[in-house]
Amino acid sequence: MCGIAGRILNAPGKVGNDLVELMDAQEHRGADSTGFAVYGIPRDTGYVLRGMGFDKSRMDADLEAFRAVLKEHKADMIADPRIVTDAHKHYCFRIEISDPADLAAWVRDADDLSGQIEIQSCGRSLEIIKDTGGAEEVAAKHGVREMIGTHGLGHARLATESSVLPNASHPFWARPFSDVAIVHNGQITDYFTWRDRLQRMGYRFLTENDSELIAVWVSDQMKAGLTMAQALKKSITSIDGVFTYMIATPQGIGFAKDRFAMKPLVVIDQNGELAMATEEQAVRRVFADECDVINYDGPSLTGIWGVGNQKVAA
Image (cartoon, rainbow, N blue to C red; front, top):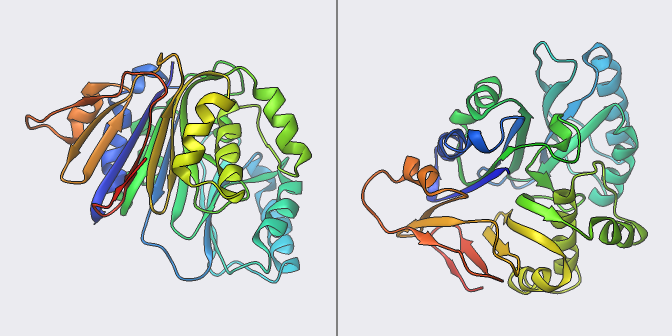
């Protein structure tokens, strides 16, 4: 059920191409939809938004309403939106914006339009691309192989509990925290309990996917003062279920495995350049030469890999 992957380079390079290879190798684990979170070279100001609209016949009106909310928060689009459409009813977009006066306040108001148009990532460097179909299909449609960056995540989804649409697919952005993304293999059994608690704290969820919860939960723990390493460890005893997840920020990628160790994770680390995946045959797509494979098969494991050959202790 589902396949996840991560990739870290020592310097900006063709990380998009490598993520496509990692996910193409795992398409048999879920071809309902495929997603990628790519961390490019960070911009000093402004954000890149990725998202979707639900009805392309309303695209012009939806984008105009979206822009109006931006202007209410003293921001605007700084380039024409890049739109991707096909035979499906939905459309996908990439929009560059200037800085809103208050990012969280703008996200809250923009999410009032989520029945029409939905932000799926917001970041100085993060771009989440996700759509229905397998890795090659999604990559060709959105130009993922050509994307340059330092690191990223991938996911192949077999839908078990929510709809087959891009907005229900992974990776998930930890709204409203910029530049945080997650991929997850497993099931959170106390999802509704935690969702209710986080909603009462003011957080908003746009899907019924339990993976969206993990992204917000970890980010909230860090907002409260925990390091990522501490938040990862706390998640193992605080969140109930069977899971392996990876969470990315501009500084690196962390992971956590539940107490039952039912969801696999394998890693190849060659001098700080890493590939991680659910299956060994996937990481071999990136590292074809003979090398050691680390199998994280034990219970209650966590770790963090830094970007740029930086070792970050868990």
